[in-house]
Image (cartoon, rainbow, N blue to C red):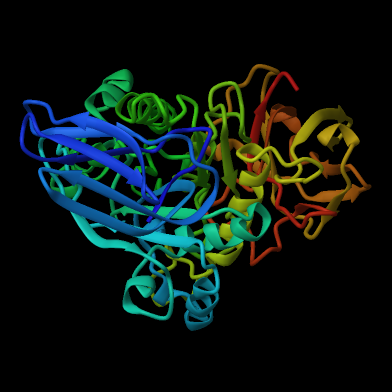
Length: 461
């Protein structure tokens, strides 16, 4: 297993006879002693342990010894969400190679919760697969592909053990992973049944692991909330904040109240032009900023995936098989946001200035500081109105192709706004469910190959 390394203390808990004593040793040295309470549960905070291992932990009570071998101290990450997080290693192209490479990481361990739902909070997790060193085996092949690949991307740079805890279930909305406290913040009580019922997976698959000391969480979910973007913007940030508070409380204040949270922005789906649903949800995932971290979503990072369609996926277009790029982008962002690495570009270009002139609009990226690469002339749209304060609806936008560009700007043709509706009152980019072919959206960072995320901007510019 992997327990959280210093500076935090790993929280360990168990059960025994009320009033009995429990002593804990690490590598033969006694580090803690506790008396079991009347509720038969005990817990101890281990001393802060540096990254590494393996160690041997021994628990003794009433003459009975329990020994845990092969214990590593490193960073523990929870991986949660719906089917694209549940998407298994064996569903990847070249999955055998992934499993063989994973085994080479001697300090990587995986742990998987079973899919269980409950109407009330549970105290113990239902475990499908105990802590396991990945390899070419059934346990690894059925583990979350994104979760495993994320760790495999980070370990070479960080050089520390990683413990990956999967808790995911396909076809589930954000409400089911949220506590009643989080749901009440947004007044979002959508009627569902089964694993989509509000809080039933929070109760069974998150609440039982709250005592774990963790470094952070990654999340791939949102498909089941498409069509309810306005609600999701509140629900997502509320869930993150609630998880942070409750992991902190239940771990003896060892998990940070601002632990790092990464997510995958929704990937493409249908191979046709659709301007709603996933598009609005992507924007909502960023709390309507278009990027993270931001003032609402602090210590949050994301991987843009809208340029990674897989229209021939045997698992449906909603389940693209390319989790490699997703994990690489997510880990790259984590290296900066979670691990404070410097001199790394971890997100694609983002607009910093809009200038209207005649029948054109020039859009500057990143204050002109980072070079862009233009791979297509399509993807931009402008909203045409009859007045300068016209409110743009879904169907008020018209294509505005790129006519020229340089190292930091693109100029788009706004001549589609003419006559009665000659005011340009909005502009948006990549506002489609599936905006481009693989890695062929319009704007990328020239030096990092990262796609510019979708955005929408209304007057004033």
